[in-house]
Each structure stands twice: as structure tokens, then as C-alpha cells.
Image 1 (tube, rainbow over the protein chains, first blue to last red):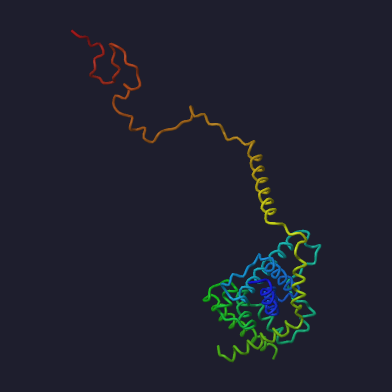
Image 2 (image 1 turned 90 degrees about the vertical axis):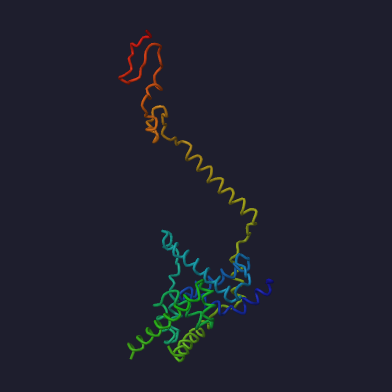
Amino acid sequence: MSPDALELELERLHAAAFGWALACCAGDRAAAEDALQASYLKILDQSARFDGRASFRTWLFGVVRRTAAEQWRRAALRRLLPLAVLEAAPDGRPDPAVALARAEATRRLEAALASLSRRQREVLHLVFYQDLSIAEAAAVAGISVGTARTHYERGKAALRRLLEEEGNERT
Amino acid sequence: MSERDDHDLRDRFQQLRREDMAGVTPFHAALAAAAARRPASPRPPALRLAAAAAVIAALAVAVVVATRGRHGMAIDLARAPWEVPSDFLLQVPGAELLRTVPELGRVTLPFHYVDTDWRTP
């Protein structure tokens, strides 16, 4: 794929990739932008290369997911080091100002998603937010289709239960 | 789970998506920020290889220096007790013949029926 074609594809998927980065970074917008920029850098420098085995979107989401995980590990390591107290590392929580501006239903959904396992959250995001099939979600998450289907079904059931419980508490 | 429930979940996620997209950084700004993160003078592959080789060489030297002063415990092979598992095969009647020097006129066999003062008549 030529650099121009690559840039066009990235531009087309930019918003979706940001949404996915946001999901990978537990709603932390700064960390998501950081992960997305680092992913673009990997792609532009060809340390991550598209080989055509999957769709471009599936491949890009995989790169973003791995990059976000690398950054999370680095941030966790920094927090362990004694000098970590000197720098204000993001704690992975959404920006309070952004959280305030969120619609009530969205905040409830985010709170419920936070209670799910990481895999369930990823698969549900990829299917419902990104409109990917379960097979595509499995490819992005690096798991088998059967495992993705299990996470999808259990995640859906758990998410619905959590949303209903919270709805009952509010009434 | 019914289709209606799935639609309900999908609607919730799409609402989340719309809110997420409200403040997304434009693509070209994100790309420029990514390019700005690139190191000023990226190292060429040859330089990287040379650096890796230097690190490996330094490690090898460190290992050699660290192990130079160490000597294992000396073993005196002549005194070391060691028994061959098949030694019992050599314990046969008359084995003394193999260990002693024979002398004329004297038989060192331990057998009782051997007369050591035997003379030819």
C-alpha cells in the first residue's frame, strides 16, 4: 500500500480508531490520543506493516490495541518507580469535565461497562460501537471466534443485568 | 436475548459513539502530532546493529571478567575413591595370581591341597 493510500485509509478510519483507542484506554481521552498518535507513528515508520491478511480496519484496530496496552504497561511501570511521584501520570479515569458533560444514559453505560471483564468490554465495543462482526472482533482482540462469541453473549447478559439493576435502584 | 434488546444495546453504544466523536482531534492534527513524536535523527539500521553488537560484546567481556577469578575445587584423581560397578566381575577364585609376582619354587595359591614344599623325586 502506497503512503498516500495509507494516509487516506487512516483518515477514513480516524474517528472510529479514536473511539476504539478510547475504549482501550478506559475512557481516558489524553491516553487515547497518545495511543492513537503512537499507532500512527508505527504505521508511518513501517514498524507496523499492513500485510493484507485482514481488512485494513481490523489490522489498524489491532495496532491501536497493542499500542494502548504497551502504553498502559509503561505507565504502570512509571507508577512503580520512586520518581513517579514527580510527574502527573494519568490514572486512566475519564476527565471529570468530560464525564460531567456526558448524558446520563451514557454515563450509566460506561459505569456498567467498567464492571465487565476487559475481553467482554472489548468484544461488545467492537460489535455494537464499531459495527464489526464477531469474527472481525475476534481478529482484533487476537482470540478465536468461539471465545469471542462466548465473551459477546456473557458480556451482553451481564451488561443488561447491570443496566437493569441500576435502573431499578433509581426508580 | 431478543433482537429488541440487542437494538437497545446498540442504540446505547451509538449514543456513546456520538458523544465520543464530539471532541475528536482532526486527523491531520493527530498525524502532525504523531510526526512530531518522531526522534530528530532516527538511527540507521547499521548503527542499531553496531549498538547491539557493542552491547553483546560488553556483556561477554563482563561475564569473562566475572568468572576469571573463580576456580573449581581441585580433585586429586589418584586419591579419589571410586568403585566401578562391575568390580565384582574381577573377584574370581585365584585372583591373587594376578596381583602377586610369581617366584620359582613357591606357589602362592591359597588352595589347601597345594603343597608348597613339593619336590620332584
